[in-house]
Image 1: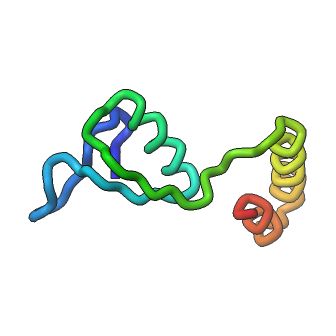
Image 2: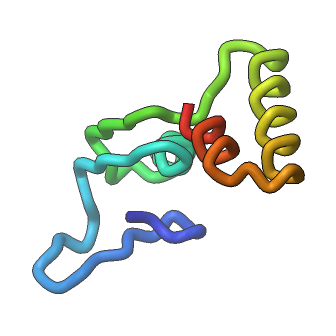
Length: 83
């Protein structure tokens, strides 16, 4: 995992600089940005990056999410966010 400065967060027994990373959702966007500025990552597997093909599609999802959140429909809002 990478912290907000792009430095690897490692635990005991892990390499100081990961060469291969796996990320999902918003972490995929962080890894993409990090790969542009840090040469240490050689391979990345990214699952479900939250990217939309059009601005209209992204706006529709965010509007629906905001509406469900305001109405207190937590389960619906989570489902919308995970699509």
